[in-house]
Image (spheres, rainbow, N blue to C red):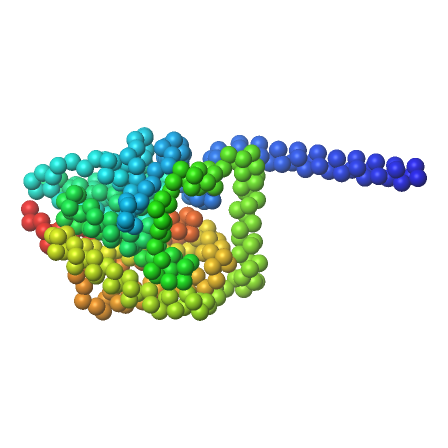
Length: 398
């Protein structure tokens, strides 16, 4: 009996020693990570951003995070509509004007002024970017240099998590008060993504009376910016995100190949381009009657980029593991949209930017979806050139 008791004591002591060594190892690892990696991340988005953002860009991202948390609950639906706007707010990096959109207040129009609104989801809205470095803000800065004798105003009508139909309704509702000349819709991927997830293109995000009420917002903040001790440990984040690649490999098998599109999503992919085209064509006709020209820009997606960086490969494989057939689905939808846009007569200008980053070996889509700050800057430059040419050919003669 004494021998068994001694064995149990020794086993327990061994366990305590093992746990003590393990805890010391974790503490040393955490300390080392803090020494060599000074960037604190609170969610998946920030983890991947921290791997690709330059120092100044990461500093902007940290200020953005601080300001977004301090602003608090910010989104509201306009009654009897699907139009989603923001509550007016001011901070160092993020400001919402009295109309409910990101950026400066709308000023009275002056003679010769050109007014442009850019509609889109989070890429246009500018996640983790200060107001002056969002795509619309950069477009305004670029174009002002091309037309020094005119005032160029570019409004940021990006809405987080939005889709084409929501932005079309927003354009109809606000085109008069904004006194627009051009409406630019930066869409394709968001709608493809929602259509895959819900099995049809008619699904509309945030289709409720109060999609971002105080309680919902607090839950979202708890997910995006967790305050728990464990979630804020660097070693925890390293292990969790390193496991994503292993998980993708396990689910996809040793070949790590992309699989065929599921039947429900295959039907959606076959219908997507027709509905998508009809939506933008009807909107363009409506806006043209109001004196507003329409431009549709098909954004780039990682599924069609060649070549992919190592991080982009990791993320596309992870999405494929979570969403079977997603890679081929996005490619099929993209090809079908390109085809119908090139074949049909249109009331709008179609610009295909899906291959804008082909040949770029660097990471462009840092989390498999959103653009790095450098990629946002490059996108703004391309759109600026499109608008300068369009204005020169159709509207401006000076």
